[in-house]
Length: 113
Length: 228
Ligand SMILES: [Zn+2]
Image 1 (cartoon, rainbow over the protein chains, first blue to last red):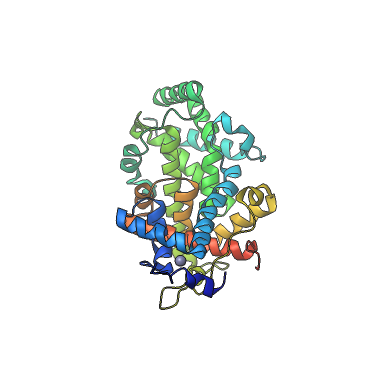
Image 2 (spheres, each protein chain N blue to C red):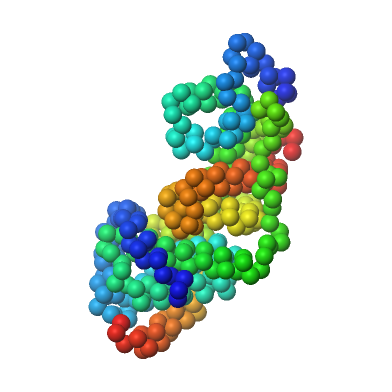
């Protein structure tokens, strides 16, 4: 979209009451539903008139989704339902054994446990 | 072990259960057995605790510390700490949540210490350069375009997933830790604020900037717009 197209949106009496800068600034508050009603209405009116801000918002949402999608596989919770997403890497048996023996040493040092 | 002082009060008041999650009955009964065994001083209960929870705990430690040896160390420290302080685990929280807080807190402390030792790392991006820029009249200097690939298309490629993880790693720690805790570990603002010893307002500002910076980094590095 050219700058001219962008500015045309503001021409028919629809003065942008908030600017693209403010849209960018208040994006998180908007998505978290923390804007009060008049501000939310302003925000949404701006989005109706300004495709670049909509693209910015979409990319911002997609970033969050992509972060989740790309980190899920190696951060699968221990629930069996997520078995298919578990890392292919074997459970760190060496680390497990190290923890178990460190715990035995700790328990001997402190027999109150 | 001074690093763990203070976390107990925090973890035992938080994360009150979303106990009816995936797994249902069997998960709940396994958890109950582990808790009862731990309280009775049963060695096998500790081993089960470790085996059930080590995977995700190691993953979050590694994500925060970006180093296998440090992650191993912190996970071990965390389980030992849990063993010594099991009295402070209250039944209204889930074990997973409780252990997660212990390990995240320990990893963050390690990160703070190593940063003050080593100074600023190489290969870290400047967040302010990645934020959108605006002219005085509030118009953007760059008109944003739609992305030409969907999240599904991007996330199915192993190479892309690795690139995304590397870009997250390039964010400065101040921003990276907030993004990890909020968007990956899915903690809420106040939990994140407490763990990072920040105000909720600061957490929100940093999360927003981290996402904005990452958004631009992804768009640029993955060539996500038509005329990129
Ligand atoms: Zn706009």
